[in-house]
Length: 220
Picture 1: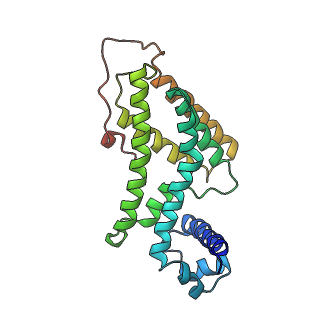
Picture 2 (picture 1 turned 120 degrees about the horizontal axis):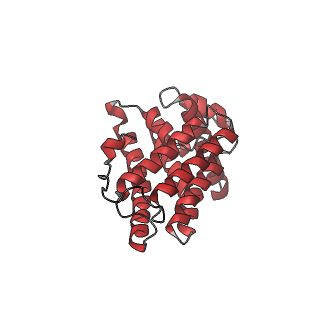
Picture 3 (picture 1 turned 135 degrees about the vertical axis):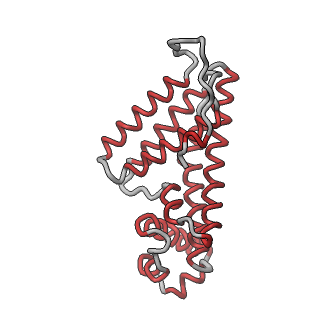
C-alpha cells in the first residue's frame, strides 16, 4: 500500500471509531462494529491498530490534536488576553454547531469508566485536560500581569471552571437546538469576561473573595 492510502484509511478508521465510541461507549463498541463502519475486515483493521485499546487511545490523541488545531491555535493567535478568552468561547461555539460533534473529551472520560483496567485511558484523558487548563491558566496569569484581568482571582481555578463549563455545553448540544446552545455559550462568554475583566467596578473593594480551588469547583 502507498503511504497516502494508508494514511487516509487510518484516518477513516479513527473518525469512524470516534463516532461509535462517543455514541456507544468503549464497552458498547466492538471491533466488528468498527470494521463494518469502515468497510474493512477485522483482519484489515488489525493491520492498522493492535486492538480496541490501541484504537481508543489513538482516538483520544486525535481529539486532543483537533482541539489544539481548531480551538487553541485560534486562541493563541489573538493578541490581548480578553480577546483570547472571547475566541475560546467563539471557537467552541462554532465546533458545537457542527452537524456531528464527537469531539468531547468528557464523553470519553465517561466512556472509559472507573474500572481499574481503564486506568490508562483515564490517565490519557486527564493529561489532555491538564494541558488545556495549564495553557488557559497561563493566559489568565499573563492578563493579570498586564492589567487586563483582575488580580484577586485564582487563575488555575478559573481555568478549570471555564473548561468545565465549555465541556458541559458540548454535552448539552446533544439535548438542545444549536441556536439555544450558541446563545448559552454567548451568555457564558459575556458573564465570564465581565467577571474577569479588571475594568469592571466591583460593588465592594474592602473584601477580596478567597480563590476557589479545583475541588470546590468540582467540575471533573
